[in-house]
Length: 327
Length: 257
Ligand SMILES: Cc1cc2nc3c(=O)[nH]c(=O)nc-3n(C[C@@H](O)[C@H](O)[C@H](O)COP(=O)(O)OP(=O)(O)OC[C@H]3O[C@@H](n4cnc5c(N)ncnc54)[C@H](O)[C@@H]3O)c2cc1C
Ligand SMILES: Cc1cc2nc3c(=O)[nH]c(=O)nc-3n(C[C@H](O)[C@H](O)[C@H](O)COP(=O)(O)OP(=O)(O)OC[C@H]3O[C@@H](n4cnc5c(N)ncnc54)[C@H](O)[C@@H]3O)c2cc1C
Image (cartoon, rainbow over all chains, first blue to last red; front, top):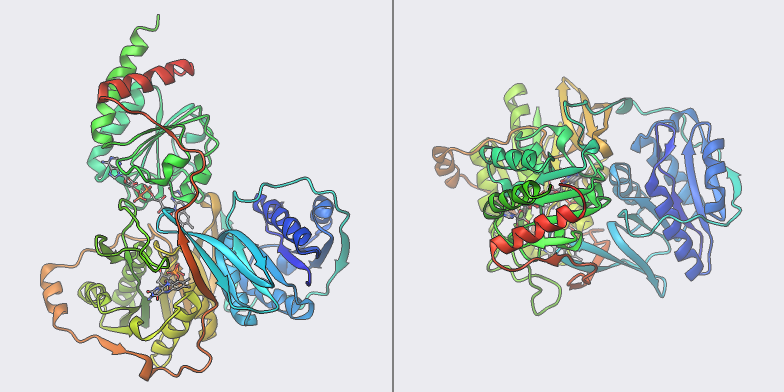
């Protein structure tokens, strides 16, 4: 089998954590299939990246040019399609991130390579690539087989292959850049940092986080009241921000904040993967959801299956009682 | 400005019991409710806002069985001028790649300056159809769009990255944008508009209207299965008072109150 490629993702000079998971997945597959892992680095002033990643792959394919400093999927696509055409990897691994989602479907389509996205697990079965994916709000998994081809491409979900140390001594190979300018039709201009709000939810020991189960902005006062009674701060899932009920800086998850409080109380949150990645580091997670099959119960330590509007008032009273009898 | 929006009708499963049917490859759908995919409601709104600003036409297109006509009628009621349904029943193995190829076949003869899709369908979660469609049409794309400002043939585009970081791009039209939720405030269709839309014709195209050459799927579904139960929460039981007392006890034990 030809090499397995893993595409290194970096932003503002730093390697994205997901890259180490990709490389770890790639090493595992390469070992099983008796082939080698190549880390593909497109960047500018790549020496540092190469040093950091050397132990992680059998080979590092480096394309160094100013044009790769910031991510532009059109530029990446043009460069990678030349590289892949020349090298014919058996599989190209890309992270299922804002970067990979923009790049993979277009790159694979351009190359005519069968691909799929957001994979939890992958395996070769007699040259055929089979993947496991999550569907229907995490309530079911699907096993999907790709059309048989000498090369494949996939995007991998984070949190499935723990990053590893790596004990390889990757050989560095330079590749002349096939592109050196951004196309007129898509130019990277700048990054704009998320606005800083009045409260920093990452600093709070207790977060009371509310999701679409809130139903109405008017109900927010019940949650705020509860949070302040137990000495916590209110956070939320994305739909609460989308609806304009809370400010963006309260959002927990992949496109919001990553929090690690001592206590995270999730109220009316289903537990979508993009939410979980932002809160799974909490010490203790208590989830209240009326659906016993909600995926949040696979992440929480304690669960209450009921209507949050019934639970919250009683819970508040009990916690206040315990608080008062403290001394 | 001529605009196209791609809309998928999806099962609403966040609060539902999802069961696999006897084929092992589909779910039991009779008890589920269906609606316009969440990010598509934002894509549609963005399309209507653009049409209101710059004039032109707005076409909504959906691949699906006859029920998607209800969803397309909502789009017509909100502001689309015309709608196309591609008959899903005429095709098999509809993965994202084939879906995009069929969408292309349905719209390739229409004039379009801007195409909007959602950034993800909340049933299958692939996040790929819009990007494939753009590539097949040979136009540039941007995904996870949180803001797009179009002046003549230029677009200032904000993509939303991890942690809420924004990537600002400058693009030229024609282009395709996959819209992230929260970009705007989707409107409701008025009752009068819904009644009016009920009488509008929806163009239906099927296998006989589409040249099948080269149209193929990338993936085939082998089976659906219930995810293995990993770590499960300890579900607290008893009366509401008992449960609440337990939680208070846990919080106290952790030294948090
Ligand atoms: C092997 C396999 C077999 C399948 N068989 C069927 C089948 O027989 N019938 C069936 O209905 N589904 C079927 N599906 C599901 C399916 O076709 C998915 O819809 C497809 O894979 C696209 O992925 P997605 O829905 O996650 O779209 P995403 O890529 O997440 O969608 C992004 C955006 O693309 C647009 N879009 C996506 N789908 C459509 C659509 N149908 N019409 C208009 N715009 C759209 C929307 O704007 C959406 O927001 C199958 C899936 C697989 C993997
Ligand atoms: C690129 C991308 C980035 C994203 N980033 C984020 C992110 O950063 N953060 C984030 O949260 N999401 C993010 N999402 C969205 C994510 O996929 C989910 O759509 C979202 O997390 C769902 O939020 P929710 O759980 O509040 O809503 P839903 O999934 O609709 O769940 C609502 C839950 O509330 C329960 N419920 C309803 N009423 C009650 C009641 N009265 N009592 C008790 N329970 C009740 C229901 O059973 C259900 O489980 C992102 C998506 C994409 C595509």
